[in-house]
Length: 346
Ligand SMILES: *[C@@H]1O[C@H](CO)[C@@H](O)[C@H](O)[C@H]1NC(C)=O
Ligand SMILES: *[C@@H]1O[C@H](CO)[C@@H](O)[C@H](O)[C@H]1NC(C)=O
Ligand SMILES: *[C@@H]1O[C@H](CO)[C@@H](O)[C@H](O)[C@H]1NC(C)=O
Ligand SMILES: *[C@@H]1O[C@H](CO)[C@@H](O)[C@H](O)[C@H]1NC(C)=O
Ligand SMILES: *[C@@H]1O[C@H](CO)[C@@H](O)[C@H](O)[C@H]1NC(C)=O
Ligand SMILES: *[C@@H]1O[C@H](CO)[C@@H](O)[C@H](O)[C@H]1NC(C)=O
Ligand SMILES: *[C@@H]1O[C@H](CO)[C@@H](O)[C@H](O)[C@H]1NC(C)=O
Image (cartoon, protein in one colour):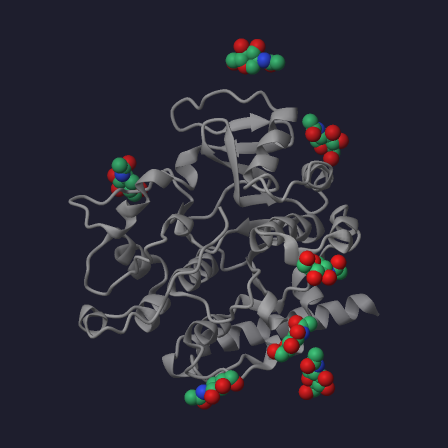
């Protein structure tokens, strides 16, 4: 009975996908079409497919910045057969059915992409049945200075434990599929990031990370529950050596991916993304590009016609975002910098 229901749901899903694919190609839909099948589906229907790509927004912000929109759109294009899940804290409160109008152009254009799904981020539910739940119920989040980052660190672990897939920060532009299921990304030699990682659901590494998270919890140390946690857990099971050439490290139960895979431009050089290059890098050894939005305190934006590396990446990997959210030079000069890029953890 359940099986029959699942099959008919799948058929319905396939059918509507085909239909919506047609619709997503029509720009006039972007500000008005809420795909009806999405409203009818429960999160669990989507999430149980277990090969999701997940993004998180742990502030109450709803409208994605152009960079966030580009991250999500590029993932949707690179992984057409996967569901792209965007969990937003701000949707927690009846705004799931918020009218999609011109005030939310980024939200609207992403909602119209067939394999992008927005769901409310409810920490209390997400963390249930994980080691993080007892920690969460005891902590007073209003006295935690870095709560936006810490809650994000916790939620990404819990999500990947529960459902499996790949977590990505919202300042990562996907350029080709990651050919690994269980991986951590090296930010530099011997140091892991937690800005992107992928695991099968119920992978023991993630469970161990969540246990270590609460055992060594210290909200005052920046990154202690984030990259620091991933790195110390990795050291327990893997002999971390320097990378040779562009070769990943094979560790028990996971791969530790070379910095070129996601961080071909290191964080001290983040401004290079907003510069014009004589010859642009090919990024042939990369799966996705981390744009270090956290470093971008001066809020550099992508401007149409500027010919910066970032502009050309947007044009190529997130054309709908580029077309709809990126302002031209003329408009910017009139003092209308519409977007401010919000900080993204790590
Ligand atoms: C829901 O929104 C109202 C008003 O914006 C706010 O006061 C309340 O705290 C929110 N509730 C939750 C659970 O976020
Ligand atoms: C959400 O909306 C429903 C129906 O509009 C209403 O009954 C409910 O009280 C709302 N909940 C919150 C938390 O605002
Ligand atoms: C769009 O929706 C928001 C949220 O409901 C509302 O406040 C705003 O007035 C609407 N804007 C237009 C142009 O309809
Ligand atoms: C959390 O901390 C704030 C600020 O110190 C305090 O006002 C509040 O009562 C605390 N909440 C709980 C549930 O302990
Ligand atoms: C690898 O995974 C298996 C199965 O989850 C687990 O039993 C084993 O301890 C893991 N090995 C390491 C080194 O973490
Ligand atoms: C770790 O790797 C280094 C370099 O390959 C090697 O010399 C050392 O013996 C290894 N240690 C362990 C515990 O495997
Ligand atoms: C990158 O890949 C493209 C296509 O496979 C190839 O044409 C190009 O020569 C490569 N560039 C480098 C620097 O390897």
